[in-house]
Image 1 (cartoon, rainbow, N blue to C red):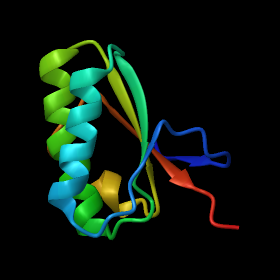
Image 2 (image 1 turned 60 degrees about the vertical axis):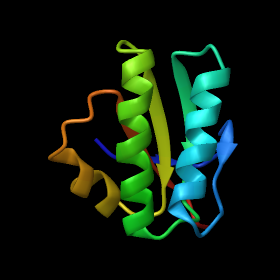
Image 3 (image 1 turned 45 degrees about the vertical axis):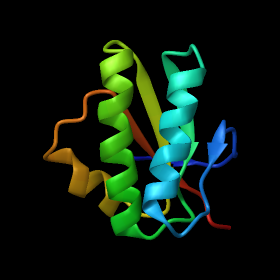
Length: 99
């Protein structure tokens, strides 16, 4: 279920236009930080890049923490709809409030 996220509590904020750079940044954080739970703000990315980053990094996170979760802060419910078919059980999507 998509929820409205009204406060920016993210640990990582991605604003780079290069999805490969963003994937590297999140994967580096997963590698270096010993945390099963993390929040990543990808609301500044376009929809396709947000889908790519969340799907790829969710898989990497799952390999290290099968019981962990990533909260993805997105700018559109389309990101969750697109990645739903991939059955990313470790991903939660929150819609960033754009007021």
